[in-house]
Amino acid sequence: MTMGRALSLHLGVLAALLALHFAAPAYHHTNIARIMVLAIYAMGYNIAFGYTGLLSLGHALLFGAGLYGAGLLVYHAGAGAAGAMLAGLLAGGAMALAVGLLALRTSGVAFMIVTLMFAQAGYLTVLYFGAWTRGDEGIVIPQAARAIGSLDLSDDGTRYLVALTLFAAALLGNLALVRSPFGRVMVAMRENEERSRMLGFNPFTVKLAALTVSGLYAGLAGAAYGLMFGYVGASLASVQYSILPLLYVLLGGAGTVLGPFVGALLMFYLIDYASAVTDAHQFVTGAALVLLILFAPKGILGTLRARGARWLP
Amino acid sequence: MSFGPFLLLALMEGLVTAAVLALTASGLSLVFGIMRVVNVAHGAFFMLGAVIAWFVSEWMPGPPALAFAASLIVSPLIVGAIAAMSDTLVLKRLNYEPEATIVATIGLLYILEQAALSLFGPDARPVPAPFSFRLQLPWFGYSGYKLAVIVAAIVLLLGVWLILKHTKAGLVMRATQIDRDTARAFGINVDRVYAGVFAMGAGLAAIAAVLIVPIQQAHYLMGGDPLLLSFIVVIIGGLGSLRGTLVAALLIGLSDGVISTFFAPTLAKIVATLAVALVLVFRPQGLFGNRTA
Image (tube, rainbow over all chains, first blue to last red; front, side, top):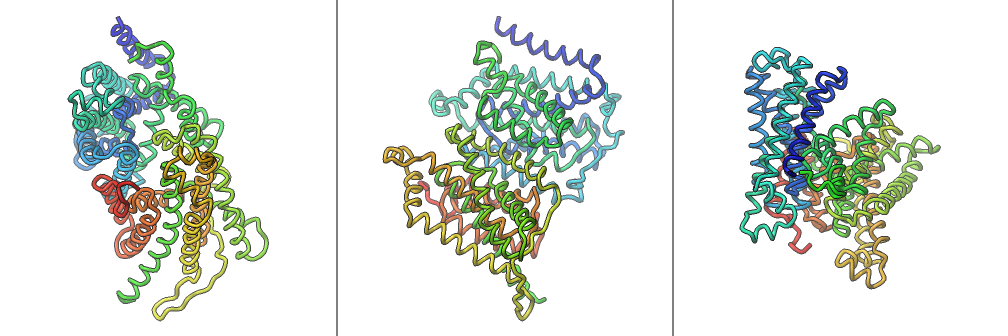
């Protein structure tokens, strides 16, 4: 019963997004495609932060690994978009694995600072190899290279549908993951690491696996973002992009499958509308962070779940 | 210029960096040591200090030295007040939970940067130095103001040390650091101590910025590098150990001066950030800290 209710909610969201493909005006159509890609990133972040309790401040490194893993292959080696996307996915996962092997020796505040430092080193590395990455200016991926077979990713309609396909796969994968026995062990790590260890689970391997999955999501999102919107630049690997998914997840609800999408959607439009009134959109981000952590640390869906909708996965 | 004088110049530049860094980082270290709060907005407090110094120099008539002296007092006071307010309004309500305070200070960082951008504008603006005296060495001339910065930083740090070790306020702070509940039981108003420490930490960053701004110009994004370097210094020195912070600031400042002069500054920063991450992974107590600190 509960499984059915949760599954139909998520399928319903996907169906609504498909309907929007036909109904949404062009401006929102592009926005939602972008939001879906960012939501994949936030979902990955949520797997580490929301479910496993790993507050990373360096996910931009994983997003950047996917972004540059795909972008550099296409731009310098003339790789196809499909192969590049796969490469970006794997680059994100591999980077997460490497970072995790070192960073997971620490926990708490030290983990946050180590991940922040690694991401900063990654960002500076992108700037340092400006000859290849074109640094801050970034690479504009030529339209001809942004095609999977006959699917032209620079075309609005195709881009939306590809984004939706990736989003659907990520969402259902996330749902399956948190429903699986492994997903429950992840939550157990978040809630009480010592007790989980006593039950025979190795915290290090569980966290490393969760972080790697998180990296796969971030890498895929980075690759898709670069290929779909045709731009690969250092700003997308900066600390700003480590904070964004944290913000989305906090707003939507940490530890909920739909939370990252809800958070990304609301935050994107909040900043969009705020930009129309004032150019102080950083203020909106900052105020949102402070207010959320003060008054609604569980986020929207987390609060709903606490107030009765206990079946929300 | 031959190698010897060139190295001397690099070391002198490094000493200036080290002096300002030591001031900034000791503020961060104080806040972490006593409150166990990792203040991501520390760089924003630094930036505010510089921006306020610019406003004072614009509005204040008379010679630059007068405006500079006024900034040295006004800037840390305003920044300290903002810090104390954010502590009472936000951090206290979060019960100083580590993860929540980090998220909150990130939010604070964005709010302060936006405030500076809106009120001060996106341009870098110079602030005149209080005096322009040039020290003529056999090989090159060197700004006397930079030397004054080094001296001022040493004096201020001595002041901080004296306050911590030899005044009632310092005793109360140290008592709170060691055991906040026992301190409360002895009638210490821990909330006020925390607000004071947070203000003092931010004030130190603001003073450091006032000192550096005649050399560097004020800009709304100037807080990024000091924040990163302060993190590096505080971690290498051992989280919360003030003496370690000072030694590490000297180490990082000098090597930054030398590496930036002889190699690329970006490379220097990559090496430093990676080194820090590895220090935290393999020696979490820092190079100079002990496990209990």
